[in-house]
Length: 402
Image 1 (cartoon, rainbow, N blue to C red):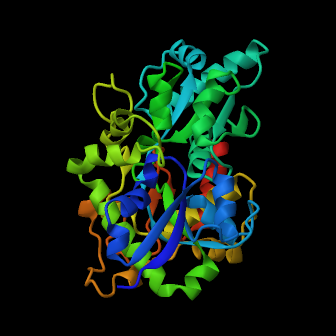
Image 2: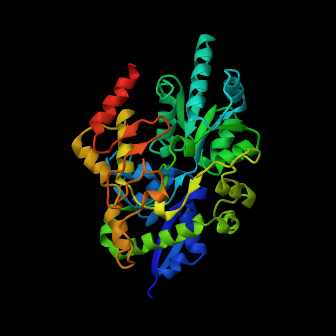
Image 3: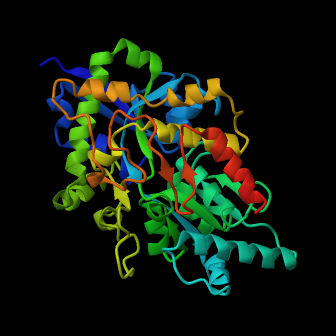
């Protein structure tokens, strides 16, 4: 078999596992790919490396490919996502001081995102009444699931993320130190950084993505659109490689070996036990129960590039003034996710066309894998129907006046 040389960039996060494991466990070699991994420390840097061709593919924030198709966020080339890499894994954490202020409002549970958001709203009202400065929260990138989840969560408690708090961007490996140094009061970040913050005693997790959006998209495989058009066979090999790797990562019996692989100095350079905590859902060792579905690699759920997810991200970009609302832009956003390329990769494997609701919450996932319009619900039970964006925006507007 001829080996195709291919370079792929990643950020040191646990959800880069399918790419890292593809190299470490031979899944790349099985597809005839000579995979070279290149580590980056910021999403902007990785985006640019992919855009200019320094890497052929990348572990990427799911909304970045949507933003690239909309020509926002300073893209140098439009990207597409032929498959997903992971779901969930994020958490919202706050400083010790903010945590204590939230407790003073009577809040107690980190597993109820609505209650946590309302506690933050009460703290903000008290701070305004006392003439104190606004709180500052960090996310990892303006066009990230972290940003849209944090904004959505805050807005559920009538907190305006553009008026009532300060939002800033901090790369994942630096976010816990930024809180320690007092530059921020809270953050939304992917695994394992929330666990590391809690482990260090510097922060407290107050909400998990698994509770905010039970099966929310997180990272995707991103490639340049032009590269995909000129390398169709290699795209199919990449998708097959990642599906096989993700299936290995998803097996509970492989968790300890996976933690060892990811802990390497060329990868995350962290203690295996810290990584294992996130893989098992025990983000905080003292929690009575693990967080269910804290981080998902299961290819039956996490690998398919759902176009409804692309449109949900587009809707949030519209909601927060990053882009205009129009039918042509909605079509461009949907174009970022490529289920046709995903399916093409499996034409020779005899993969069934459907993923049944046995694999996932039937409110979120359609019965037919060919559907481009799975409806979505988050923790507030608000329906997002990608076929009715007008209705979705009207519902948001109505909620402001209720």
